[in-house]
Length: 299
Image (cartoon, rainbow, N blue to C red):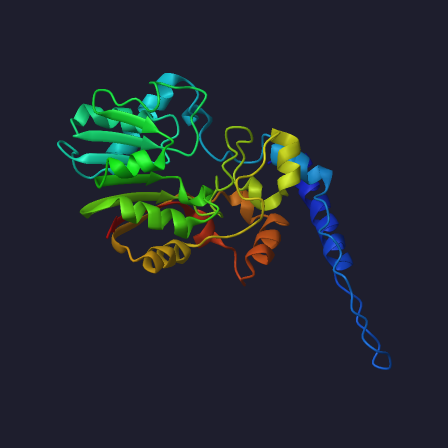
């Protein structure tokens, strides 16, 4: 970080200090009746801070070379997901990718000779690698949940980067449970909201933890897109495990994929902003290191 950026951080720290002071309500006099006050709206982030987030000094959320852009990239990513998440071959079994996107994983699984590979999503993608709602060569991509149910139950279900997009994750998990066979396995990957790419905006704003520092409106003004969750909600690991317990899943295996938090975020005023945001007495290193939460669930 150069001297200019260090000076900018110091200026931003002063701005945030003044903003925090202005947010404190005045205390009523002991001799007067307390006045009910309407809390002021949250202050806008100083423009200099927005500029800093977009600068070259701010760490990237993901390696720019790892961003998925071409069709070849998508197939390579699908192969990586299959190798990472599916612990055994699906030969002769029924496979379901719940939240399949364009369907690259479902198509990739076909090479393992399942009895059927189904990809389900709530809407058809613009880019269609195969025709949807047409079963061919043991592959079916569909938006019709009833068609998914009629082809079940499933021996292997993948739920990759889906729950943190759901408006009602409990309802989604109950649906997934109903689709699994008695001995079925459900492989789940989640993004904690506080992870370095928890805002799912790195394709448009590849800046680590940007969603923790900028408002959804500011992110939209930069990227032109809304956040999937338009509020700063932190979903720690226990949130997901509580959901699984509530639905009645057994957690057979869980793993946390971590990334090192750069020293950049330990500097002031970023450190104080994060400590106050998480409402703890120390830097939230443990929370921010969690990039992915992986689970294997049983009915």
